[in-house]
Length: 388
Image (cartoon, rainbow, N blue to C red):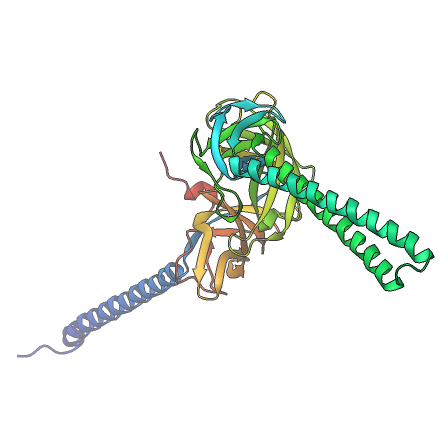
């Protein structure tokens, strides 16, 4: 006997409800999984986009000083320096000075024995006497012919010949006198004098040495003044127009540590050296006690006013590209590469002459892939510092 009625209906609906519940649960589970995967994908996309925008640290350029204290190497030289040669040939008879001798202007340095010059002077004086005797005879003859022509005892031609002969003899006398004076000067050159007060810095001869004059002459002494010096400094082209005459300079010398000497720019070459791209400047310096020796190396410090505003940046901000030197500046989260011109190199920092106006946010340690118009995220200074 089979069940019928409500009981049978309830029995037939039970499995259907179970299947429906299972289907709904499966649908809810699938919907939740799809939503979770969607949220994960959205989050992953957001993170990927954020990671694609690089983060950078920035710094601001520091303004340079209105005047720059530059330090340059200098070459110390005497204000007056001369090599002494002989004007008379012979042998060195006496020597009164040596290396390091301090001499006065006009002081005798050496004497030369020149017998040939002495003999030539004797001969020249004899030639002068002969010429003077011939001139006197010609003068007497010309005077007699002038008297005879008045009585027509001689012809006009003979009188003129006598007068012309007298004029020629007078010219011979003048020539002989000039030769005597020349040899007298040569004889005076046997004594060598100091042209100015100074120190003998070199000696290239000694007693008995053969002394030659003219094209084959050899330097006998070298003398340099010590009371006033000149220092040659090569100023970079960047500061060439502000290294004016009268600019003060302080000088330091290696063998006088702690000593400071003061001088002024006295003259310049007024032209840039095409090899060094620098202006040769001369600084005069008083040296009354002879403390600074010529030929020394000096460190010259000068305060030069800058003609334009300059800035300083760390060296790790520079970008070297084929088109030239650049720095990366961040403006409203976007990178802009701007060209700059460098001045001096201070080691960890460099001087920027053109390209910056101040206040820019310059990227530190820029990557090689950084490009113009690229979006970046600036890391705040506090977050960029390492935590202790």
